[in-house]
Length: 201
Length: 151
Image 1 (cartoon, chains in turn brown, cyan):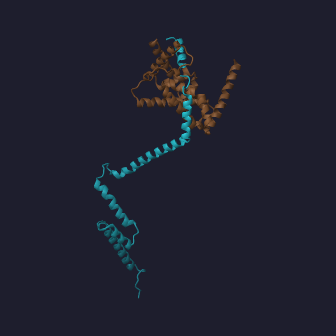
Image 2 (image 1 turned 180 degrees about the vertical axis):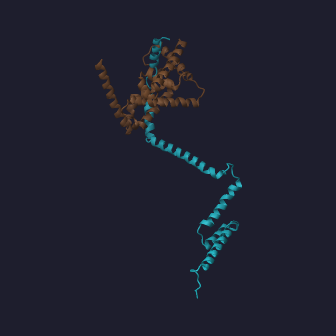
Image 3 (image 1 turned 90 degrees about the vertical axis):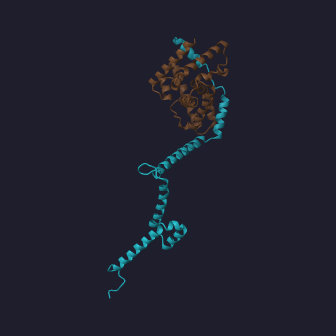
């Protein structure tokens, strides 16, 4: 057990060193390094943004903006902290900006509208049974209905804690929220989702 | 809803949208954006500075215009007062502060035309002559400065 943790710590250290080198190269204007960042973190950025804004095309736009921002701000990255946390932070900030903008431009729109076309197949796992496909479609509809009742910060807390599996300290470092605020947001998010799930099934 | 069902729901949700579908497209788009405007941050930074400067200049201009547009009691001056004030100030200042010789003043009269020169300059010029005359008279009366010999 101890040995496993030691190996895991070592792997994290190696990853951290690799990310620091990558960030420094991006800061120096190395385009190939930026390509590596996109390849390594593209999925993370997209899946986080997609669950927060609940819109595929908007999540892609946000992903694009995240990497443009990484390119511009790589010099300001603090090498002592995980690179992934920095990426999460940029993603969450852009998602909040996007949600605020959407409220201004479409004040009466509801999240449910995004689900009008259903969940595209490309967002489902590659190998999936027809039954699973239906289950995941229903899961997505339920989530969208619940998410429309949550504030952006509640959604972010839910996504980072429950879906990405981050610890409270990490979420606090990413979002700037206190641990108590995180607990409160998570409580509201869970409650809304539970209510919505019990209503649908 | 049981805890297990919630976990199951979260697990299912986690299986959705795990991969960026058009990664190559996003990558190409990002690379083209950074190559087109490689120094985009500088451009945007300067742009921001320019906008802030413009706003600051507009606010400053507005603040500086306020005393000119409004009188002390807060009421706006009449248009006639606003029009007349600078002209009177200009010519009185010109005569009082500018170090003009007689020929300069004469030239000024010609170029300014009769309407302006007749109104303000002669009075100033007469005052100047009168002060010169008084100075000359005083010099004559002073004992050590007299041109006449004691004899």
